[in-house]
Length: 631
Image 1 (cartoon, helix red, strand yellow):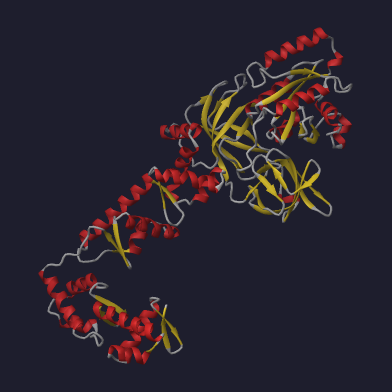
Image 2 (image 1 turned 90 degrees about the horizontal axis):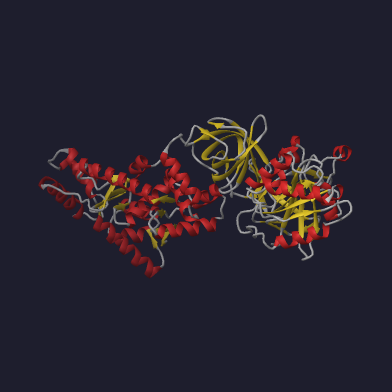
């Protein structure tokens, strides 16, 4: 692995800072108070070069129990941990707590470093080693190398460096393809440069001049400059300790715990679904609604625990939970969390995020439990399908799905295309995606509405499109509604013509009286193609009930008759003939005037103007001065 971050863990005054100085030649305690008191209070950062040529970043964490929050802010970015135990004291309370913390954070590789080895004899050293081995037997360090060193006299340091170098080859690569995300652990200003943030780039890459955002504040920022281990670079990659000079933001607008992220890659949340794993030797029982502290990245967030499938959680047990947060944070699936009691501040265990943007759940809902179990263990495709199913009633687009999951758009789109091939989701032309089940329910509702409408209005060619949409969707989803109806049309479920929608099997059926009215209307307009009567004059002369006449007119409009303007109606054959004559004339002559069109139809100026304006409005012709051309 090219980009390595090494961190320390262990009890106060067990020699973590001194060990780092022995490894790097640099002092990580930078505060006056730290130097005065001889203890680490804040996180310390430096780097050193390994024999293989790799450059490793290293994080020094405070060991005092009062500064555990500061320790937690830095430990999440580690690839390899050095668990430091002083030979003269052995395992102490903070050794145990730090070990618990790094264990639940899913750090895979580590070395146990016994410092101050020169202060004890060989027999005592062996007793300390035996005790440590017993304490780590149920952790990821059970098979870890154990090395004794004397940092002051540089005894064992060379061998430790070689062991670290070897271990880097066993550390898996960081994800550089996912959206960039860096928890911010320090914020400061440099005169002449402005705001600077530091952190371990957890995933993705960041390049100078990128525009990114600070979450959860949603503050857009520009990357002005990047430094990795004190050297300016154009691009920083996942796994590197990074200092970034930001434009467009003040120091006061950022704080430790915020996240620098790719724009629209994460959605801030007030709830988290997770699998909570209690430590076997936790001193507490967790009950529903207990208040806890959640540590994620460099952030500490207060929350209430909603136990979804049990009334209490005992030491060593696991349960699906929903954390109800007291402030916004940004998080994604599979992120590890450290959970501590609100007061007293004891480490309870760890949790793995299952959903970073869940809906509020009821407790003891078996469907919710089953859904979380699938999300916990499911493939990426299965999890994306569940996400689409959950949000279908909000008609999500792919970018929304990718944002709620913290995934790249291309990755989500690829999986959705596979799901569409398996008929599990429906991709609408507007870019929105629905789960097949939701789409099917919406289709059935649409067809039921149309069927009912046809039954009550047998002479109407269909329901007004706007009316159908208003009964299926809220106004903000009009674009989705058009795409949805188009999907039904393409599937042969419905007919769409102009402003009407009908079931594909529906046909207007006229009785004998209706047929007579239709024939009289056709005759009235068929005899006078370009000098048509007013519709209201025709209807007054028909010896039938006005309501029935109007039903027939509505049924044949746009098929037999067509309304050119508010008071002019043409026979459809006349309309088509006028359109053909117009097209032929313009194709031969390049244009047509009003008088030429009037003479072409042998009609009056009034009707010629009305027909031409209708053609203009329907993008058939375009007016250029006193002439028309074809669009």
